[in-house]
Image (cartoon, rainbow, N blue to C red; front, top):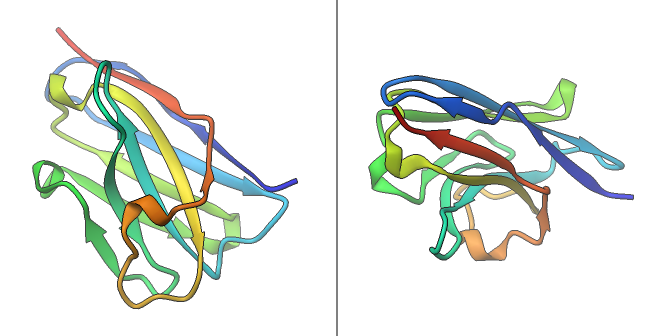
Length: 125
């Protein structure tokens, strides 16, 4: 069974940091583009960041540039999202997702076909 399992969510004050992790089971991530998506209350799901199997990175949201970084550790079958300088508008359920393929440039985030169950991130004072 192919699964993505996120961890690391929680509550933090504005300006704080969180590191999300997403571990794959049932398959290996080395030939997948990996993305982080989010859905805020009352809003549609949106893409945040993506990293290809060759290390290419795409920011789907300009609002996270300079604050969020994505990385992958194929040996651990895990992708990470480091979130710094968090803002209340970053509050959302964060999902990791995978799309099979060796890309130089990330695909559109709507192409990701395999999703985790999500982890909640709350940013408030």
